[in-house]
Length: 332
Image (cartoon, rainbow, N blue to C red; front, side, top):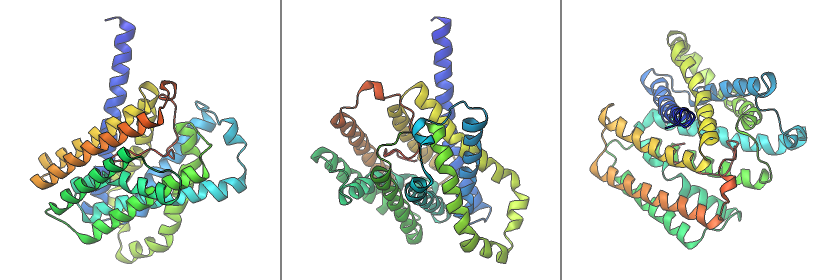
């Protein structure tokens, strides 16, 4: 093998390894903060990754100018930003906060299984908003994912209704975000860091702004600020991993394609379920495993039909996408 091809292969494999590692690490660290270390404040915790992403993206875009602002970003007015980006940012923040809150009550494996249901909610939301009507094959794939998720949920050994309802809110928020994205930002395409530069500050403001009224008073009343002081390095790790997840996604898209990110995301999610069962000792019943396998199978069919029915040109496969693009990735 030629030296150039070998180095390229090593480069791609390194990026893939980074992507497959940092996502699960962030989930496990957030789970530890919210549950194990007794810091049940999902808005504050979710804001860590968005704040670090905002800082990192600002450095990349404005200081180092590795990915300068595009003309459409420069032409964006404050009125447009306030009426569109801020609204989408609110839905995005809600999705992240509810998603992290689920880890307070549910196991890591069950949360990942429930996330496989997200495409069903998204398709329903897009249809109800009159944005996109699914074809019969897509609708049948969604039905199969729904049945698989229901079957897996009925087999959950440590089912907590409150956590399940929170995850339903998380998936509804994600669907709302994607519908708003197509409604309000359908003609905009930003680079990955450019998208973070525009959206991460909004998400951070929503999360920490609401947390000042909802979570901080309870935190001070219970004296939980001691957890932050004692485990500051864990919180710092969560912030770094939050930005690293976005960087890893950007690198994989640049070196492979956005389709590969979907495939790797599905594999990463399934791997996290196995890790939770085999290493962390979480109970995953045979019924759960069967339901999840069924859901993943139909998720693969869903993605295949979505890609083939849209007839996406190969030239679009390597486009950089901002985190608002209306794509669905299991375990996001």
